Structure formats: C-alpha cells, structure tokens
Image (cartoon, rainbow, N blue to C red; front, side):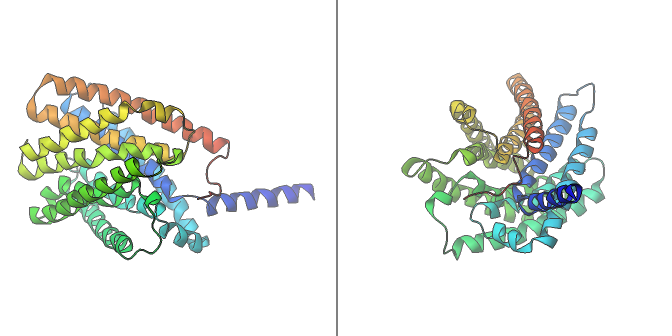
Length: 331
C-alpha cells in the first residue's frame, strides 16, 4: 500500500514537472548551438590543432531533441498551460528561439552539406516570419502590456531576422536577406529605446531577468556579421555595429556586481548566446582585418565563453537535481 502511494506521488510529481516545464528551456538549446558555431569558426580561423565542434554539435542536437520532445508532450497534455505561456508578455518572446536553432544549424552545415543547410535555412525563415508577424501583432494590439514587462528578452523575436542573411546570401536572392535584415535592425533600434527608457526612468529589472541584459549586445554584433556577409567584407556600417556591441559588452562587464548577487534561474542562459555571437563576430573581425588585437580578443572571449557554458551546465544540472526548476512560478 505504501509502495503504491509512493508511486502515485512520484507520478503526480512528474506530471507537475511537465506542466511547469518552461519554454525558456529553449535558451539552453540556443546557447549550446551558438557555442558549437563559435567553436567551428575558431577551428577554421585560428586553425586549432583539434576539432571539438563535431562533438558539441551532437551534444547540442541531443539536448535540443530532449527539450523539444518534452515541450511537445506538454503541448499534448497541458495545452492550456502552453496557451498561457504564449500569451504571457515576457515568456512569449522565447518561442522564436525555435527559428534561431534552425538558422544557426544552417550556418554550421554551410561548408559541409549545402543542401541540408538550405533546407534548415528555409525552415528557420518560415518559422521566423510566422513568429515575427504573430508577436509583433500582439505588441500592436495589446491590452495587457505594462512598462515593467519591457526587458531585453523582447529582442529575441527580432534577432532571428538579423541572423537570416548570414546563410541566406548563399541560399537565395540577397533581397530576401535585406528584407529580414531591415526588419530586425529597425525593430532593434525601437526596442533599444524602450528598454533603456524602462531601465532609466522606471523600476529596475528584477533579479530573475537581470541576465537578459547580456542580450543588449547580441543584435548589433549579429548585425555586423550579417552586413559583412551581405556586402562581401568589412564596411563602415558593419564596423559601427560591431564596436557599439563591443562597447555594450564592456559596459555590462562594469555592472558585474549585479550578476554575482542573484541566485540561479534558467534566465542565466541569457549569458551564453550573446557571448557566442561576440566570439564569432570578433573572430570574423580578425579574419577580415588580420589585426592581432582581434585575435587576442577572440581568444579571451572564447575562454570566457567556455567557462560560462561550463558554469551554466553545472548550475543547471544541480538545479535539476535539487528540483529547483520546472516548478510553478509566481509572476
């Protein structure tokens, strides 16, 4: 009898975990796939004597399949909870990460399997376009948003548009890439104004969302990479974006005390993808300019990135062991 009760309690607990499995788990997948791309570019540009990216790719795909599979079960069993997440003014911004996974994977396969890269790119473009229209329509037709909902996670739906040209110039007319790039760039400017306004004139960003500040420097750095691909090399506009992104990174580093005082949340994974982007952008700067400064900077950022990813994996594993995630949240 006691054994049956224990099994029932375990089953109820597992269902509760599934019910509270957050869409923000996709940030882990994004951080890992971006980490894979960063290593791939480091191996190519720095000519490392070993290749780590193939193993990272396998690990990233495995983690992504587990996360997507688990969330699919949540959709089937707890569809109403998924609807609540999608209608949440902050959580809804994590859904377009799905498009980024396909877009970044298409970049990874660009040099080894052009056909696969093209299929992945088109899937990413379609998903990105759908989420861009749906989420921006929600922004325009809102009746629930307040200034405290604004935070850097709002950049996530538009960053995918800026990523599209990186592989897009190889797969289709550059005009389509310019179309998406313009959407991402101008919405980035609009959202930057809103986020800075919130940070300066309103209540501070809560601790749980503080790691999303790292997202601030991702769009300009990715914009630099895309413009370099679109224009075939370094250009003044791209350089402006890269240096502005680099400045934002340095500015955030000066606020490092803010990050040490917060406890672990899944939002800590917001540290990963922006650092992925900065590492890749700096490697591209070195590749295009040949300046030793950027080589040293790229190596330093890669070391930081590796330490951050290792820390995040350990913190996440410990939080799962303590059953501190996939629990009911209070807004």
